Image (cartoon, rainbow, N blue to C red):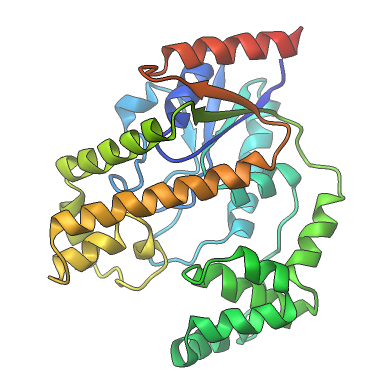
Length: 311
C-alpha cells in the first residue's frame, strides 16, 4: 500500500469524512490541504472538522496561522512537507485531504516559490492596486503574462498581485515558472482519490445545507468575535467565502438572508472552479457519489480501488 494518499474534490463533497475513515483503517494521519482552515478562530465558516468529527485521528495543518497573517503556498509547503515526511518515517499513512488545488499540487510536486525578502515590491503593488483598481492590475498582468491573466478572476487580488510580484522580482512569469516546475520529478508519488457527484444538483444541495448549518452553529457570532478581536475586515482571511458576505450583513449593507444566498452562490461557483482544477490531474481516480449516498458506499469503493492498486 502506498503510504501517501491524496483526497481531492469540491467543497462539501465529504473529503474529510473519507480521510478519517481511511486513516482509521490504514494507521494514518490527516494533513489538511485547505487554505482557510489554517487560520485560528475561523472554524465554522471554513467547515473545520470538530474534535468529534476527527474521531481521534491526528489532523495536521489546522490552526497554524493568525487570521491577520498573509499566508502563501510557499509557507504551506514549508510547513506541510516535513509533516508528511515524519508521518511516513514513522511507518504510518499520510492522508492529504482538501480542496485547495494549488496547495495540494505544490506540496506533491515539491516546488514552490520561496518567500521574497522585504524589497517593497509587494507593498508598492498593493498601494497601486488600491489607487488604480484591480482592472488596471489585471490588464498589466495581461501584458506580461497573458496566460495567467486569462486564468485568474478579477476578484482574485492576491494571486494577481503575486503573479506581478514574481515577474518584477525574478524577471520570469509565474506561467514560465510553473511550466519548468512540472518538468521536475515530483517529491511524492501518492495515490489520488477524487470525490464528485453524479448529479451536480446534489452537490449544490449539500452546499446549501452546509451554509444553513453554519448559520445554525453560530457563524455570525464567530464573525463578530473575530472583528471585535481586532481582525481587519479587509485582511485576506476575512475575504473568504462565508465571511465577507456576512460581514456585509452585520454592517447593514444587506440582510442575513441575502448574504446567505450570496454565500451559496459563491460556493457553487467555487466548487466548479475546484472541479475544473482537479479534472486536469489524470492520476485522480474519481469516486462518484450517487443520490442518497451519505458516505458508506464511497468508503467501500475507495477501499476496493486501494486494494486493486495494492495488488
